[in-house]
Amino acid sequence: MKHLKDNYNFSVKLRCAVCGYDDCFESNDDKSYIKCTNCGKEYFGGQDELIEFNNELIQESIEQKKEEITSDVHKELNDIIKNAFSGNKYIKIK
Image 1 (cartoon, rainbow, N blue to C red):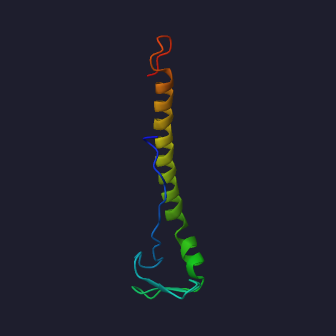
Image 2 (image 1 turned 45 degrees about the vertical axis):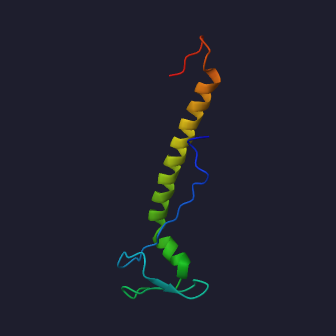
Image 3 (image 1 turned 180 degrees about the vertical axis):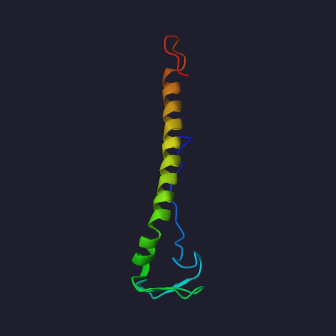
């Protein structure tokens, strides 16, 4: 399977609701409290609150990954069908 990857893992960097930075968070061990070290915004709901704020960004990333997977599967299926019928003079796949 030349078009399909071994995995389609991806990650989304969560952004601060106030300043938009994505690399300046500090949290307690269980991530039930998070603070942006850039602007001082505190997320008392912790990681869940930050994920909820970033829901649109997460959904966009999921849609992009879906498109990539769909495209790869489409290419793979086309190759499988072409190979299955190659050499058959009665069936032509374009």
